[in-house]
Image (cartoon, rainbow, N blue to C red; front, top):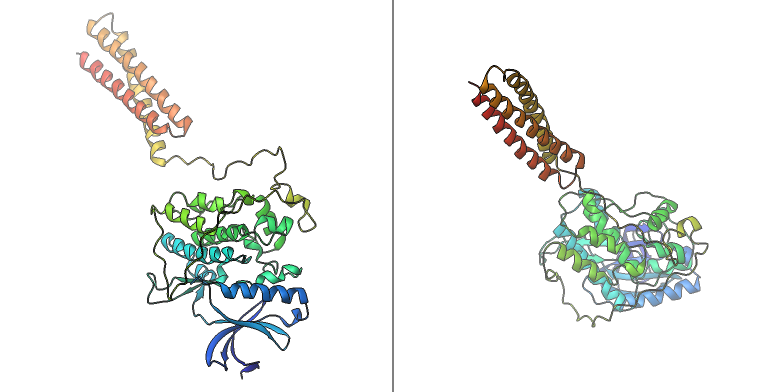
Length: 438
């Protein structure tokens, strides 16, 4: 049985969260099916929250980017705030990653570009999303796109932001956002109006799409807070093999702890990710409807000043590692672990050492036998001398092979090759020694 809500008939509950519930509804005034979001009844009467919701809903309704779901109407019915939006069918990125794991890199970059387009449009209009995460990225099918499953909408603009005035917690994190995707400065200083907090969240989404898992594990807020403030995430290439060179650096820059070291705009993340695929220009814009011209891009904002001293929102133990205090040494560069030596290089050095040992033993035995007969047979003197030279040269080759094994670095291949060359000379000398012996 459907529920009546003003002029809307609520037919099916599509989802429920800390910021309310979304229904498939019919607008009886205009005879169309819409997605209707109602804010929780317990927030009714919070004047400051309601004013902020209306202000930000109005800003979201002005956005003309094709990757933002159009808002038809918003307001209040029976004391409850609501949003009337276009009903879009599709799967959210979180559900796709849960089902498929790490996605193909070209697909990830395409999704990233479309989300970045929506974020830049919002930031240019003075609106910060504050809850960018895979479950707020909707992938919809369209016969007019290059990839029929990947026309992207960024949803929930201007909704999660209003709860920044409260202190409620949900199962997944703070009501002001989702802890797994929140920038460090939000925990320390309560920053919620800087576009770079959306850039950080977009970096988390990029990491998760490339690897199939969030950059920081854990479900409780305290653990995630600590990791956002202190831990450098694992580079995606160490989780998923075959990623293009450069994507690790893109993720690292987007997830910089210090906002001043982060990308200033979401579009810069997408541009660098596209370059990592070896393409100089971004792919053509996918669209399913006529686009309205975008306003000119304003200059990048100046670097943010260092954050204020930590407050009660972040424990001192969490604050110290990233607070840019004067004189603090720079953190070690991420992803600096040495690359492992391929097994083929080590095998070559080991084989050279084994061959050198056998060749040296044979040469030594020949040297002792021939030089022992030198007084009775003149030919034995020449043969013994050549065997002695073979013994010395073989020892040098074995030493070079041992140096290659000890180094176990980039020079291993060159030293293994040199060892085999020296051992070849020793082998030739031994053959000559055998030939000289009648």
